[in-house]
Length: 171
Image 1 (cartoon, helix red, strand yellow):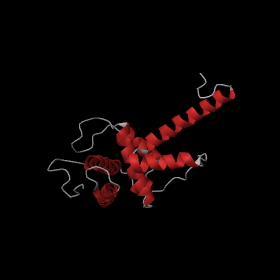
Image 2 (cartoon, helix red, strand yellow):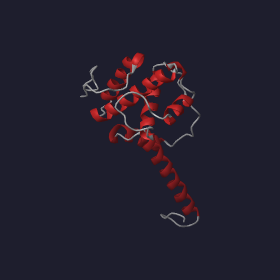
Image 3 (tube, rainbow, N blue to C red):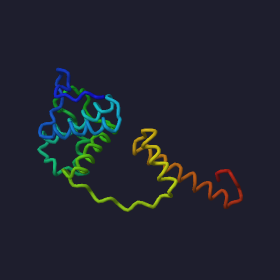
Image 4 (cartoon, rainbow, N blue to C red):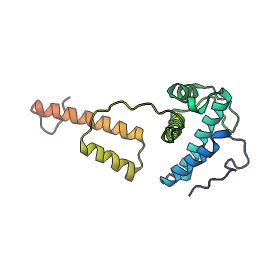
């Protein structure tokens, strides 16, 4: 179990979540309840704190967070106070921030954009996605990649069968 204490930085300077601190703590607890390791939770916690610190420095209200704000965060030349020593943030780090923003949206703190109508997936694909989430701990990004790949394979297999080449892929 991850230890969530106010002294999460172990005496080092770290990002100040400010007014978002209770929500960052709730987010970390949520991830812990989902079964994530303490290392994973601490990575998400650091990313959420960094976003909160950057929002304060950039004078952006939490309620104004949208895709444009997260894009600006992703591109900012990091001079935020704390223990980070790099100038920018990685794509993985930005995905962690986006997961925190999604968490805020689920709590109706930020406006959630309406979901676009997605193509209907076969029941077997949906069940496989659920299995990946529950039993393999796979991220949504990986699940999307796997579904795209498998759908592409299915189309090639169907095309090869139509061309009279059973059990092979059309080249």
